Image 1 (cartoon, rainbow, N blue to C red):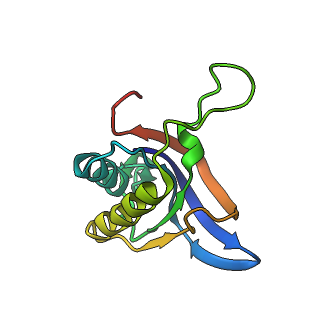
Image 2 (image 1 turned 120 degrees about the horizontal axis):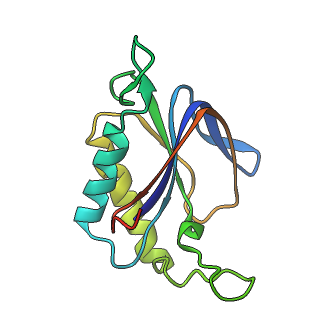
Amino acid sequence: MRAVVQRVTQASVTVEDQVVGEIAEGLMVLVAVRGEDTEQDMDYIAKKIAGLRVFSDEAGKMNLSVKDIGGKLLIVPQFTLYGSAIKGMRPSFTASGPVEEARLKFEQFIERLKQESVPVETGVFQADMKVALVNDGPVTILLDSSKLF
């Protein structure tokens, strides 16, 4: 799994002019699933997201997690995180999981995140989404369950 985690003061996802997910302070996370992702991959990314200490404490240090501040998560499926443009100018997305398998794993991942006791909103799998956010900081962290970065 891969995730792009952004600390936000607000974020939303709109599909066909309808807001389908919206949060105030918290983390907006773009998530991509591979076919070979396992429960361990989901656990690793879920724990990282819930525990990332990217919010400021009273001393102004990034020392608090989204759980610590009572924030929320907006999780947006985005298969293009596994896009590769190494060859040519048109990206290849063959590393992304097959659609139905990726959908199931995304849904399992959302359930896994909910076990971390953080409120979760989501985008819509395989929809044309419009994502709006105010990146706070900006703070953006890249996660990869294969620990490539």
